[in-house]
Image (cartoon, rainbow, N blue to C red; front, side, top):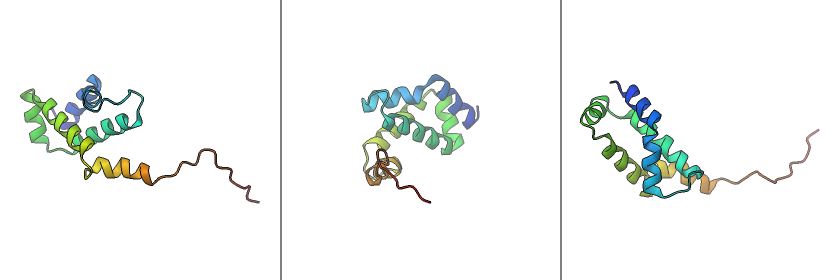
Length: 103
């Protein structure tokens, strides 16, 4: 199987989402849970194909997914932390702001 096929199969099984939910204990509708899952899929798509195929063939892919989730969710220096958490902390909601009409 190719890397794309492996990730596609994982997505069909929703395996990454299940592992993320088990580790993080976040509510199913929490945006952090969806963001983390999508980030893990992206990391898997960028992972070395030969290593990913070896893990898939030896039925050890779950170990990689668990390690990726743990490292990204718990670390204050991970790409996930900077891409999502820091961005959210620095953002301001525009809901409820009344903008003047420009004419």
